[in-house]
Length: 201
Image 1 (tube, rainbow, N blue to C red):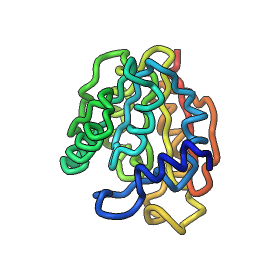
Image 2 (cartoon, rainbow, N blue to C red; image 1 turned 180 degrees about the vertical axis):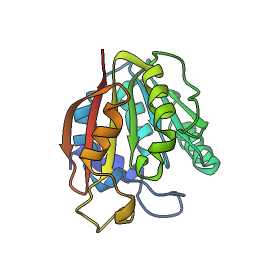
Image 3 (cartoon, rainbow, N blue to C red; image 1 turned 60 degrees about the horizontal axis):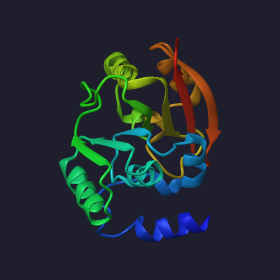
Image 4 (cartoon, helix red, strand yellow; image 1 turned 90 degrees about the horizontal axis):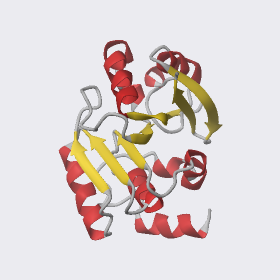
């Protein structure tokens, strides 16, 4: 673990009263995740189902004040807590909204560089909500924007959701690509995997 991540982990502890909900953030190396995302200063980052907001806060520090983080979650307590954390840490580039990701997104057309969904889709009925969900993601992504999804591996059951809720990389790829995306790469994160998709031209 790098010095930057050690300091960040101390700042955002995984357990204790400050964490009102689950987070996959420390199930894997955040430096590996964000190294693959290749965010840069000024980027716009959409965190769908942001939970405790760990990814949003990490991204906010990378993209700087000229960038923008949109953090969405259906739980009002999590959004309230994230807003408080962002205020306390001076992260003025985070906009947090109470929002159901299975409904139209409160984000402008072609405004997002990276749409990020971590360990959320296994709890979404993609047969019912997939068309609207992925059409909305395509709407808000810039032409060269990317959709990045993290999910728990199906073969490692020591952490994460029950086996019958998990999505294999092949299932995820099929679900996403039929809605106008193309796989860019896949990354092994240990307990989880991450797939990046681009918008089909």
